[in-house]
Length: 85
Image 1 (cartoon, rainbow, N blue to C red):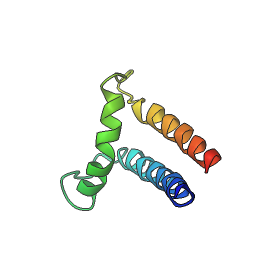
Image 2 (tube, rainbow, N blue to C red):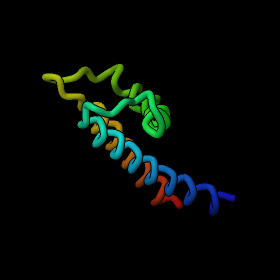
Image 3 (cartoon, one colour):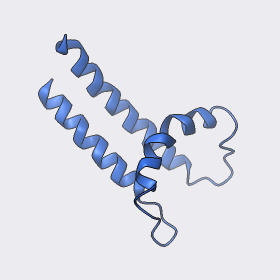
């Protein structure tokens, strides 16, 4: 059973990392309306995870570094799951 679950989880974590990177890159464009589709879906997928880190890591000089920490943790967990799988 773990032969199916762990590789699937590892792949999910990698794809979720790509989605977060896309979200961070798109946040550099101020003209994006995050309430219209497909941006609202992207925001709904990534913001719950990113908000966990935004609660504890305040912006430094107007720069939000919480996605960096969130991605590092996600990469660490992904690597751990991949090594077990």
